[in-house]
Length: 369
Image (tube, rainbow, N blue to C red; front, top):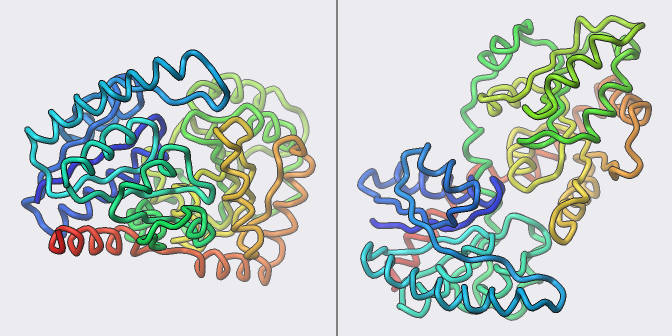
């Protein structure tokens, strides 16, 4: 089987595409992958590091208001379609899979025009502009959230699959998670993750609450600052007076996030779709602080979906303070019944077999075509 993956701009688009590709390779080891992204996106660095062949298309996104730049984008789109058709004719894929980001536009559109089976995956509750456009041409639209099904209009093939990143955390070893942090196995961990690059609002709230961590006994706090904020945050915490900071573990980044998540009792996180897929697959309660700096504010509906189900507490960034965060953490971890109930609610939302479901749909689609 020959498969083209496309999606870019952020890890939230890249990692689901990779997860689908890896699942297909597990099921059919002779599967060949080609990833088509942009030369400017994160995918140009991440994908080659994963050992997946990479090609680029020059394309930019549309502005959401009238702009002369959109005329240039249309020209780039037309050129991008021509470039994509050339790559597809050369590679001759059995299927093209798009996971969002503007690079998907010309690649999936070109595939549809060439008669190649196409699948797009939408990670967020509210679909992005590119996936909305492509839903008119794709053979199958896969969605992470049930709420998304009715948001693709009259498309005849929308299926609820969950996010394929969920499958990756299934077999994570929690013992390795504890060991990598130097924390005794079985300890209760509260994990703070402000995204792969970190988040200033998270760091500020953590520094504010750090002197009062003794108010929540028996808990180990693991704070992932992001490499940009690490040194400053560590210095700020080191200068604090009052309270014992022996249970606060500050790290710039986690290379073994799945293993640490498996050992975690409560997550304080942004609400990117891939993160929520992993959290729900493992049944972890969460406090979600949606990023207000993403296109279309799409993280807030994601967080609200979990909060409405009782799996999470949502705090908007404008309302975030160290004191509020400390209070919410204490209210959850100090009550075993609530912690357990939130975990069960999260697990009910989880779709840990997502990548398997999507792979099955892809193979069915190829056979039908």
